[in-house]
Image 1 (cartoon, rainbow, N blue to C red):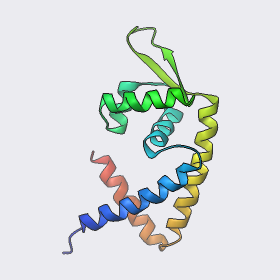
Image 2 (cartoon, rainbow, N blue to C red):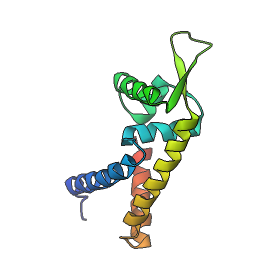
Image 3 (tube, rainbow, N blue to C red):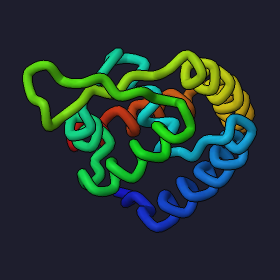
Image 4 (cartoon, rainbow, N blue to C red):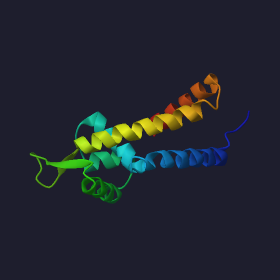
Length: 136
């Protein structure tokens, strides 16, 4: 039985990450910001703590990311009526426009990468991704 080449998988992931970072530069975003914005788009509004759990980063890291998003007018804070110490975040109109631009740029990268492989390979890779994510 052949084993998974984990180091090469990590190297391939880093190559894809570089391509994605380049694409996101056009919208002025970084990958963590983009991921946070995608989740905010789905959830509507969310606390910083919940977002940090979803992104699997520390609360401190999420606070820095949140402050960057607030300063850039990508998100806005909404007071939590149940807990005066916490607040919700949601995307602003400006944030939604930047997210749409970023999603278009990411789609171009996905298409270019996908075109490099046969459909069955893409299907297998997607199954692996889903399997890895669902186990965490």
